[in-house]
Length: 403
View 1 (cartoon, helix red, strand yellow):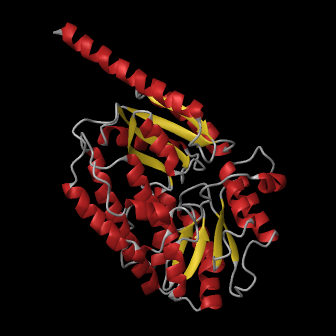
View 2 (cartoon, rainbow, N blue to C red; view 1 turned 180 degrees about the vertical axis):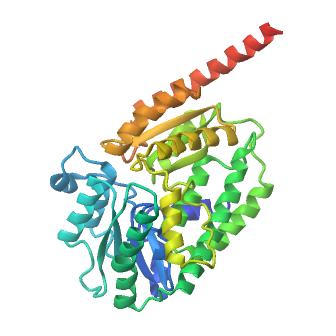
View 3 (cartoon, rainbow, N blue to C red; view 1 turned 60 degrees about the vertical axis):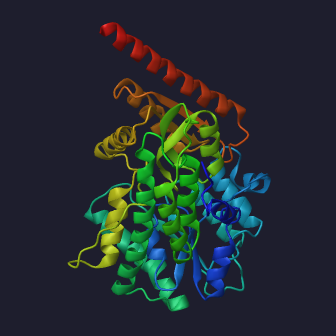
């Protein structure tokens, strides 16, 4: 296929957390607010002259210093962020909005604060750490509203004069929803028999919306959508199977590239930094304040494995099955970051359930934070693709014999 016009530019933006557009926005007087997790309502970090930056540590090499503080049996994502912070990679931030979701990220954020990774010249800088409930009910909504108001919104207003009014929140939701509509419409092309966009390309587009000021990328996303409407896919398919990728934190496009180079086209994503649920619209009404509605939306739509109520577990399984069917996939890949406690349980159980009860071909993998050079991972994906092909051949043969 012909290269997407803005793909190389988007790729360049992902090479550094303090990328070109972040620097441009700050030069225009905007405030960069860092965060790491879906449980921190992203839209509330984009009020007035603020913009959110979901933290990554691209091109991570050694994590020796972070390992000294956290041990080598902890999540590599959490260690990579700490290592990058200690290297000065996040000094551009004007605030850091953390959230209490797992022990590894808690230790990473605590070490960043204690070791002084923030720029001391930013006098308004503040750290926050929200207590995120593991349930979804109105008591949980009230709790998070109080937390986010006291720990994030008020400090933004008091330290920087940010407008945190109901009108400002509704405006931020409108801007968020435009990005979501564009990503969703682009994602619809992935349902086609021979999609005009790869999983790698889609992941690049989605990642950019998490790490760049949205007002500086929206026009290029519009152009990309129009481009895809006339883009001709390769006449000869380069993939041998279509898969849904389900899992934990994936901000490394090279993982998607590795999977696709192994013969499996990623046609749907259900992971952190992905489009589901992170790029679905937020619907507000006029009967209740906007902050409460935003918080309720994030608690209700999260597919995080921290939510262990039976109904939430079943919802995650049903969502994976729905994506498998809607996007005409041939299988599902469940992945987890090495040493991720929550996902180690979810991956082990869900992968067997999808295989044995839903009868969907499923591959279960764990991986390092940066997985491009993992020959073992590549071999496992290739073997999975071959097993899907064999299953298709047997099904065709059985159908022919049945006639």
